Length: 132
Image: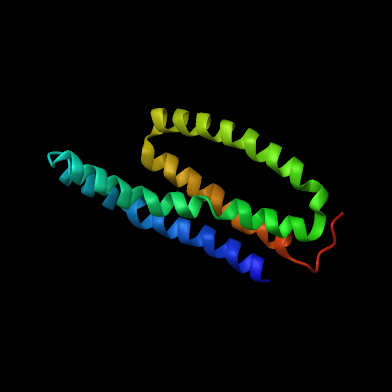
C-alpha cells in the first residue's frame, strides 16, 4: 500500500507540475519575459523550471521496481532492459512529436502516458493480486 502511494504521488506531482507550468502557458510567459535578461537569470530560471520535473521524473521507476521486487524479483533484469529500450524510443519519439506538433503537444502526450502509468501501476503495486 505504501509503495502504491509513493508511486501515485510521484506521478500525480509530475502531472501537476507539468500541467501547472507548461500546459497552462506559464512556462512560455516566463521564457518570453526572460529572453532579454542576463545569462545568469536565464540559467536560474531554467534550473527552477526543470529541476522539479527532473526530480519527479526520477521517482516512478525506482518505486515501480521496488513494488515488483516485492512480488517477482526475477523480473527486475527484464524491467531494466525494457526501461533502456523505452528511454531510447521515448526520446526519439519526443523529438519527432515536438518537431511536428510543438513542445506543448509533446508535454501533453507525455502527461497522458504518465496517466496510463498511474492506471497500470495499481495492479502492479497491489499485494492482493497474484503474479500470473
